[in-house]
Image 1 (cartoon, rainbow, N blue to C red):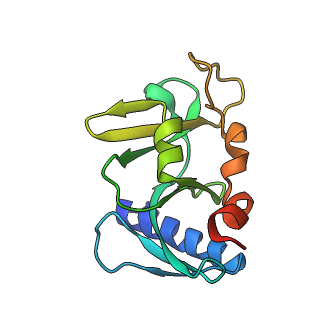
Image 2: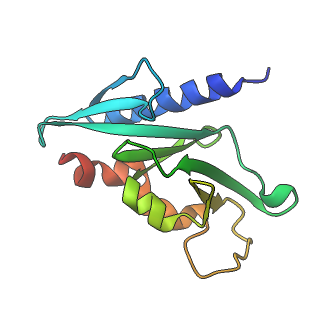
Amino acid sequence: MRLSTAQIGKCGELLVQYRLLLLGIESAPMSTDTGVDLVAYSPKLAQAITIQIKTNLHAKLSGGKGKEALDWWVPESVPAALIALVDLSSEKVWLFKREELFELAQQKSSGRVHLYMYTDPSAKPAKERLAHAYEFEHFIISNRVSELFGI
């Protein structure tokens, strides 16, 4: 069975909500698509925090023929404070502040930023920058909850 793009996106939203709830953070989905998918509430900070979620079903060959990688495109105009990047195949969630994602993105084009992570450790990126999934461990949601939500 193949999942539709909408189903993949909804799975990503639910996985982020689940991970947040396991970490003690309540969240609710938005009913309209305005660039914010979830609103989470931090009781310690006493504030709502907006989250945009981008989801991959699994890694793909980079450029269609290179090493396996996950990749996400995010509009520069995204209004959310946080961006969650999801890989459903591993059930991993990375959580970035908007400005962190824009700084770490390897490409910028047509009002969007592109962040990718090689899942194949033998991949040799052309430039010296974070490019392998293991290099982004700091951004795994469970590693960020204290910093971002004050818990």
